[in-house]
Image (cartoon, rainbow over all chains, first blue to last red; front, side, top):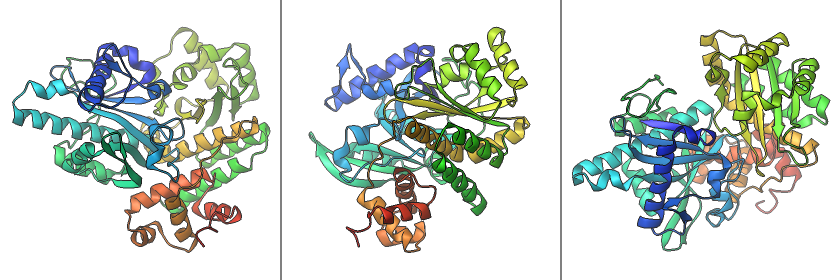
Length: 222
Length: 245
């Protein structure tokens, strides 16, 4: 289940938001060895100050954070243009109808304790839930496309999720990692496709009054 | 997108582009309010260069009296749409504020006396330099009709919100510096100038149609164009096609 949390509402979910920043540190610094800013075991960057929208995948049963991603408009500061411009030497996309997705991470704790098969299933399900969440949020906000910077590992995850994208600009090796900029169509077709793969036919977005530990909470039919 | 919908967006964007001062901006907002059948529309900009946060830039379709009233009572301090909205990303409906009480009740009550509709939708704008704005429309439609209209027009409203914001920045002497077109964006525009559809472009360039549409959307925004035709014309005038041709 996906919680959408606006930056100004972060203090309404202090535990989950903190888990998110800790998870980002574990994944991006700990596991992937990226050069990111980690303070007190939490990873943040300047784009967290630009009031992004956070999507958190939360277990309905346990209320534990399973994964997260954030969205930013391309009309404001965003990563592809401001940090990864090397990937788009001709210029990055910019439009009120194009957003960027970044800091996509699955909580390592979720799969390290479980059996391998179960772990893979949770990772797969969480990934699809987050992707569905992005599409649903964008559809509701009138957003047509999402761009994202990702590495080969993430590209494999998209392929496994049958989540189509198109590379824009020129892939480049950043540090040790082959990195790409891609664009994703925010359409009903995309949502159906992801829904079929992840067995997520109805909305993944939690109702506004959902609280952790409340099980299913309110459901709005998409 | 159906033709008449394209026309609405295009006409609105053209009008915004042609506004040369505050009065014209207000006239434009009135015009698009009527075009979209909404009861009122308003733009509020904050953090625009040189303007203190306590003095937002306002352009509204409802009475100037309300603006006076708003400023006199310093409503910018309690207006939930403003205090919350300026830090939001998703468009939000006023229903999330539930039944207002106390000062807010007075605030919303007075607003409706001055001609605001009962239902409101606010589109936040995030600008390049951290500047923020809100574009709000109100209606008196039924809940069901409103739900449908919102979904239908959300994309348009996103475009209008940002274009009005950019125009205000320009008029306030802080014009948005627009990024230059990427080679692919230019290529798509060139094929469109040759009469090709997005689908035909996609076949010619070996891309998906969605990607072509994405390039065209970005190209239109970067050129501040109201349509593909307009974008092509601007590109021609600016000599952008010369290196390719």
